[in-house]
Length: 507
Ligand code: NAD
Image 1: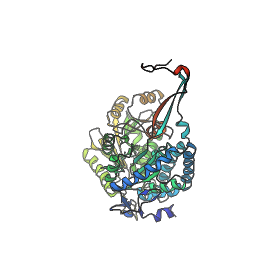
Image 2: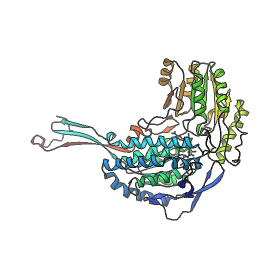
Image 3: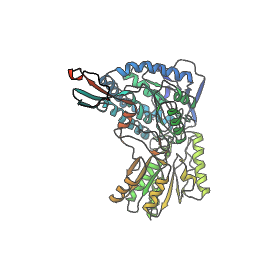
């Protein structure tokens, strides 16, 4: 018995969600959604035109007027109810993710749980929206600050976390009083509609949360729509750059999180068992399709000699199979095209002269011969000029690069154009502290391979891993979805009277 439930069997057509219900208007373009474990198409997804996006914005704008004026108590009450519903239905949501993304059930559930954290953070939003008040900034004059919603905002999200990444955005945007339009990945669109239904059930007024599905046409319509005030994006670096440049040119506030090439530096004094466990978990979890996956392991000094046998030993025990099958550690890649691309990188690594210690290309999963499975692969002797080092592979391929010293390892990390996450493994507190200070990366792990911040901190990389000023969720998320206003106020007193053309000064 798998955890596939009614929700996963019924959804064969995924349409937009506008005005609190499935879109009933005409759809000219559709996309196919595949089950990566079987290679079969199980679902069709509607692709939005400019007209559909415009309809969604109009509905959202009308709904936002009321929602923005709703009390903090009313808004957070919806978040509390949504939290309860998500908790109740999280296994169903995870099953939808497994069916369309391919990741194993426990991993899909982990993603929903990490998204839930942001919903819980949004339940406490009144605390974060509190302004400041200064009494008597001048005689009998007070001054205070407030933060207000932007209006209609949009989120464009990637395939690899179809529930969690949107949840980095919409709980905060909505709790702040905005209406939110989500354009999820067309590769695994069902989790977005599932969230929409739960939000509605939680009491969110129709139109405050909408989903428009589609591809680059829907994205372009969002970026150019004058009714959308801000766009949050998560995806690959070239698209993140395009979103940032196009969106800001259209006058929008934009935060665009891009791709990654995360390094794990292992110093010779590290706990090698912990480092091996971590490299395998972070390198092959979710088949390497995580923006925080470790893809380059930098072994310093003689660390590689002791570490590599331990990594290989652990890799040999990994079970690759359909995500809904008990005991599977790693599922398939998301699409046939992506599978060929990642496999192509393994071919390339060999021809570039790296040593392929573990070759996952020959793996066959019995009964799932048409699934997009690739076994875990391990390269040693990778150098910085090789494409397998330079490019984001986004698959189960771990590259070991050797460095003679800490400085050489740090140089590798800091020279890399991406700067999402990084980890150092060492038992030397001084070395770890030095690294945390010197490394130019947004999220740092010390003996922690995937340092994804909790909801009450903000998530984001540096350099080509993020375009814009704000990271997502935490205080920066609240800041992104609101605008500041400062009020200076007085209640007329006799000493306020009299014409004075001078610039106002405090008395
Ligand atoms: P992607 O960039 O291909 O797609 C992301 C979104 O952009 C999707 O909604 C997609 O429909 C849309 N899109 C794709 N091509 C477009 C185009 N030409 N014009 C306009 N819109 C377009 O990314 P993906 O393959 O879905 O996700 C994987 C990538 O996302 C990886 O690079 C990964 O590192 C990155 N990612 C980053 C983070 C982070 O926090 N920095 C988190 C998750 C994923």
